[in-house]
Length: 159
Image (cartoon, rainbow, N blue to C red; front, side, top):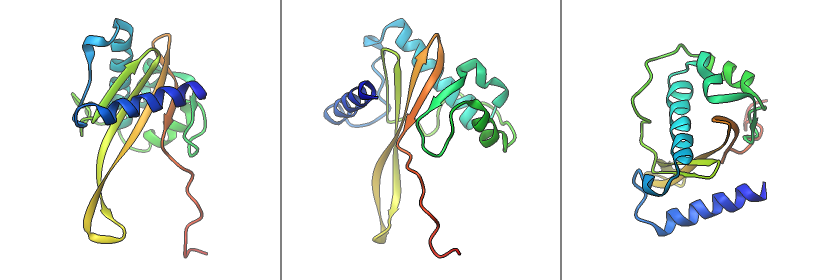
């Protein structure tokens, strides 16, 4: 866990001091394996998360993938239920919207997305925020996933 925090912190710091967040990938500094790891995650994202081809999950991820999102149990079975609830669609050629930042270092891949949302304090304004997903790759498969998700509290006003 400490290793991931250090890597994630380094990625975020690098993103903050580098050029503006605009679909950045520095392929020149990646090893062949790091480039393959990034490609694996991009294909997982497009095929499984976007296009709902759950029949292809094990092509990209281990059946017992460790999930650090507090709303999702470990393994692919819970993800099959979530993404299998919608019919498969055509697999897009790229991730849309494009990630603001993609980093592959060692066995960890991280994707950062830019978002705009209505300001809850003033609906006439918007604000910018980022989200991320990080993956650990072992033997050319996703074995672990992190994101910034938090557990949702009880719904207000419903009793």
